[in-house]
Image 1: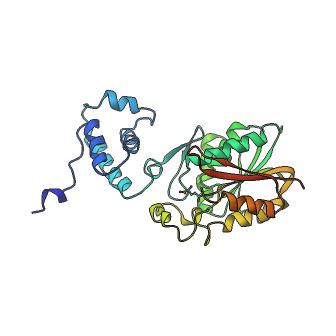
Image 2: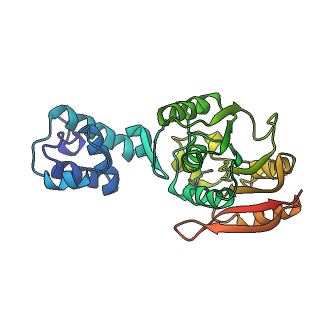
Image 3: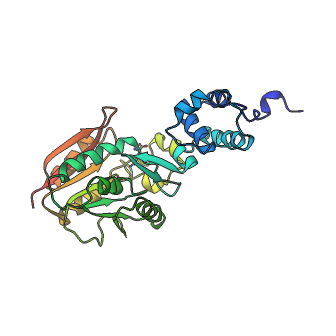
Length: 285
Ligand code: GLN
């Protein structure tokens, strides 16, 4: 007979028990709450409901589904893939393993882009490597008159982004392209959250569920940023901005690249954790 610890725990009987079980697996409380609400068919805004009903009986199918999702979460799958959804800049995006799980850090890039674009009556904007479409869709939602083009090298990613655009009824245009190759400008603004993790960064070992092509970029993580910084001047209108997300320790290198390619007013923004997260520059023509 198996020793007792080898037997998976019985599916939880109540929300309180469910959250306690997740804790013993090492899950963050917020992740467990999101998974439980998902299995109960409730909105992710219903965390107060869970507290108010913490001793209610859980339906057996929901409890079993929840226990399975908790195990997958404990093995590293992002909550967004398990629930199929991610909130980003006020939008509800459908996401799955074909695209990077959108990070709250990237909202810094969106806010900066909105500052650059808000004074223009009909800004022309490109989002390169759009993944789920997060950045392009957030910009289009905030700037209804803007003309957004979102590109990705991955056809599978573009399917996810296009489905999000349709569901949210946002008129973003999409094109399969490697950065700006074959893309016709000019744009008033180019934004991108490209892959920027160094190929040998140990951090990648924790991100095995996401597409590697959306994460890693050469020996120093800067291969794609170098390509974009070189291509963007050919597609920006004079007075246009290029804004790039990058790793917390890459600000100086990215500012250097932007200077080297002739950008002016080169500067960096920090994310909510206070880390240097985006750098950008103005193209004077
Ligand atoms: N910010 C992500 C991380 O460090 C990486 C995203 C990216 O490479 N664009 O986990």
